[in-house]
Structures are given as structure tokens and as C-alpha cells.
Length: 342
Image (cartoon, rainbow, N blue to C red; front, side, top):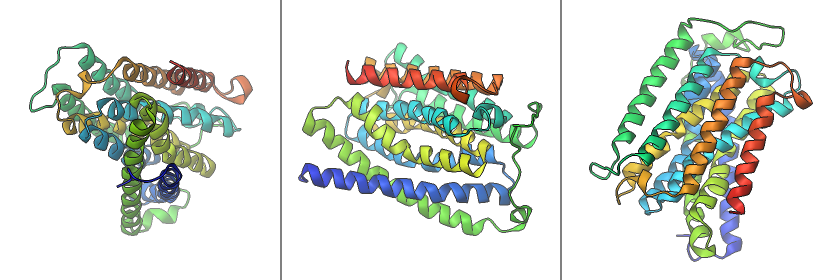
């Protein structure tokens, strides 16, 4: 469909798809906050399940399309590169939230558990890569384990949100997860949910266009699949997470912002499951290269540092942001430098 287009038209279509995804995500952030208030789900759970999953849809479409086309590296690097990019967005949000370190203010046990789950989920593909090359009906067993583990984590996260066994120490800077308007809790969530679903469909269509043009970039310009996946399509399809994070921080919905990133990242690990199913040439995990493994390690490292920051809850760091944010910025841009100039 896009193969015959000139570079100018390709870039124009790519830009339109990006704008559609980003604008939809801005509206989705507002609706997710309303849904959280009206269903009493809580910002952290709404960010992790509703907002995180919806804004990840474009990335799912990119990875699945790449796997269906037989490009395992593109599918894998788009998934793990997006996780690294989205974790970076929390560091960027920390730089604009001037009151206190974002990880201090957004204290929430649900986010801590989801951070642990993300490390567990990211470790599974690493084990598959290092293990024997096996596949049943073209799917590696670890994909099934990963999917079941994700569902289990969602259930435990919900339990922690409803009946937490411990609570963070409250300080003057800690932002509580409370409805902005108590009247919201007495209104129906049906309207916002229907509108939210419509926005999800727009984001999915945008993701399909981005995946098609990303594949053309690889073949027409001789770019590596890892470069396009980790630094072009992954970043572009992650822009909704950047926008929703910044909008949520500006609205003061800090748990929603942090939960949206961590929950979105845990959902993004399912990209690998869907891609492994879609990749018909055997195990996806044994069809990727060392550059893809590099981004998997980067995602695990950045998530571990973020989790440490959420636990330590430093009030102030260099330049008014947390030390963990400085570390995440440094790690990501170092990884990007080596990806570009390898």
C-alpha cells in the first residue's frame, strides 16, 4: 500500500499517523482519570491497566505486523525499545515536576509491585534466549508462561490496590490518590468508557500505518531492524505515553502518571507473546540478534533503577530531580549512542 510512495509522502503519512496517535492519547488521559474516579479503581490501577494498555496498542500493532512479515528483530526491538523509551519518559516528567522528586510524591504500593513484575517479565525472554531452541506449533513455551504470569500480576496488583498490606510514609510532598471531584464517584462511567474505546481504535489504526512505513524504511534505506525498531517506531509509538505522562503530571495525577508508564511497560512485554505467535518461522527469541538483547538488558536496568527510586523516595537530587532520573537519562542516551554508531 505504501511501497510506491515517495519519501515525502511516506514522511507525511508517518507524521499524520503520529499526530492521530498522540492527540487521541491526550484525550484518553483525561478519560482514564474520570474512569478511575467513577469506578473507584484508583489512579495507579487505571494507569496500569486502562491507560497503559490503550496507549500501548499502537506498539502491539507494529510488533505483530513485523512478526507476520518475518522480521523478528524488528518485532522484538520495537517491544523492548519501547519499554526503555517509556521508562525514560518518567525521568523527563521528573524534570518538569518542580515541587519534589516525582518518585517521592507518587508513593503507591501498586506501582512498586508492578515494577517488580516488570523485571520478572523482562527476565523471561532473557532465559528463553539463553536456553534451548524449542517451539511447539511455532511458539516458544516461555510465551505461554509470560502471558499467564502477566495475568497473575494483574490480579495481585488489583488486590494490592484494594487492600494494601502496607502504606508509604506520608509527607507534605506526597500526593494522595483522591478524586478531584467527589461528585465524579456518583456518575456513570459508561460514556467515558465508550469514548475511550473509540480513541483506542484510532491509536490502533495509527500503529498499523507506522508499522508499514517502518518496514519500508528498513528495506528502502538499508537501515538495521534493531535501529528502526528500538529508536524510531518504538519511540514514535511510545509518544502517547510521553504525552499522557506529562498531561497527568500537570493535572497532579502523579500515581496515574507513574502507573501508566510501569503498567504500560508490563503490558508491552505481551508484545513478545503476540509476536512469537505471529512469527511463523519458529521461536522468535532465537531469531533475534545481540543488538536486540542489548535493549532488553537496558530495559531491565532502567526498570531496576526506577524501582529503587520509588522505594528510596529521595526528595531532591541534582538539579532538583531524583538521582534515579539522572541515571535513567544517562543509561538511555548511552544505549542510543551505541545503537546508532555501532
